[in-house]
Length: 86
Image (cartoon, one colour):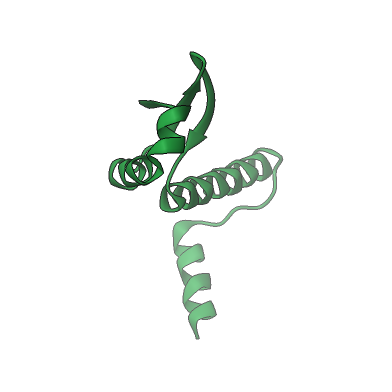
C-alpha cells in the first residue's frame, strides 16, 4: 500500500500521478492523519472496473446454476461460440 499526504497531492500532482501509473496501485491520500481518499491512474481504475464486472457476471451465473437453471458443457459452449463467429 502506498500512502501520501493531501498536501503532496496538491503540490506535486505530477509526481503522484506518475507513481500511480508506474505502481499500478491505488494511492491512499492522508488528511490530518486520517485516510481521506484514494488516487489511482485511469488504467488501474478501468482494470478494476472490468474485474468487478466480471466478478458480478460470474456470481450471477453461479446463482442461476444453484437455482437450477440449465447449464451447458464446455464442448456445447465452444460449439455455440463457433456458430456466433460465422
